Length: 263
Image 1 (cartoon, helix red, strand yellow):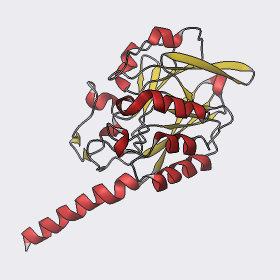
Image 2 (cartoon, one colour; image 1 turned 30 degrees about the vertical axis):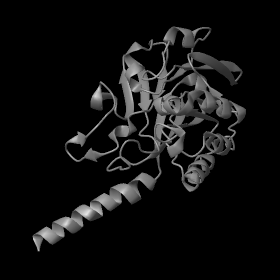
Image 3 (cartoon, one colour; image 1 turned 90 degrees about the vertical axis):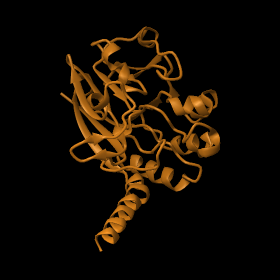
Image 4 (cartoon, helix red, strand yellow; image 1 turned 135 degrees about the vertical axis):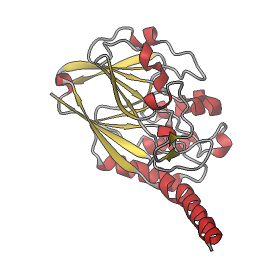
């Protein structure tokens, strides 16, 4: 009897990890102090990993982001699923759908390792065609309350050559840095008041009391997820939206991050 109960329990757990939690989508909120950006509402997303049959999932993501009515959107990449385009929804469809968002202050992103493994040049092209600004060791600015605000983005550490100096050229405060991996955080100067990162998926499968089984970061739990502050410099690491390697999530719900800037 116990063996039957154990088998049923394991099957139920695996079903939850495969069918239910990966398809959830929660909202996580953070407040960041920055007087120059007071009142600004941002959506931060990353690690979409939209699978070949993922149109419905993408529609749900876009609908939930729209419902937040953000002033601006930030992303840290990995739009596609797998290592090739064969396992992913075509980048053209992903970009077209995300291009519907059109926040008044823009949509800014860097690319992730999966994007470059699949076809980084194509993904860059279709994102830009749909009004999404792709930053690769470069920066842009927008005007908020009659003052410039800078956004810099660096290339993926695993597949490219991140160059913080080039990314920050011709910028000043306030400055937000986009990086696919949080492992760049210790190298980013303190005058960057906020860094946004992804890649880790929060660990994706987190065992109570033990933590995540796998975290793709040399810093492990330190930079796995959430809001991290070091030397008056803050980083937010999103748990992301999709899955990679294993199609499971447990105790690590997919999320869309809302950042409210305040005095």
